[in-house]
Length: 111
Image 1 (cartoon, rainbow, N blue to C red):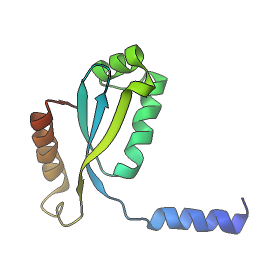
Image 2: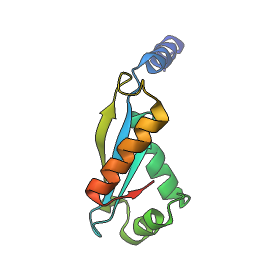
Image 3: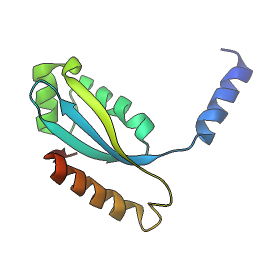
């Protein structure tokens, strides 16, 4: 990659719009589900897969299901995207409330 191309790619990444929200990670083989919140839904799947592949995810039930069923048994889904206007009332409070709502509705464990 040329230097100019690299600089342009970095600038584009920094200027992209970051959208936070709630996501769901489901083990298709066992039917278990885990929901979490992320400040950037575009990057959370990659981070989750990395920690699970390394065997270092902090949620033991999720890591155990990953070890038992493998990567192919897992599906990732963005449940709700929260724009900046929705988060004006307090990012942490809103994210926590929406996560609790989705965990109760889907019977998922919180991450």
